[in-house]
Length: 81
Image (cartoon, rainbow, N blue to C red; front, side, top):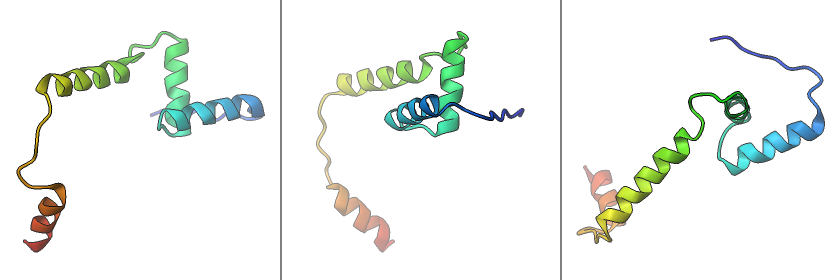
């Protein structure tokens, strides 16, 4: 895969990109690719958001569930195997 190195990257742009990456739980490189795709009308624009929305709707449609065994019990059972 090709790579891109940018010299003399403006500090304010770097700070903005870094902040957005942190807010979106992405690495700096992932955020840079995301921003470039969005700016150029790339095919993946909004794909992550659509997937997360579909998952959220699926969970909401299932309703609340109670577990037969609490999560700690599941962990203990797994450790005792």
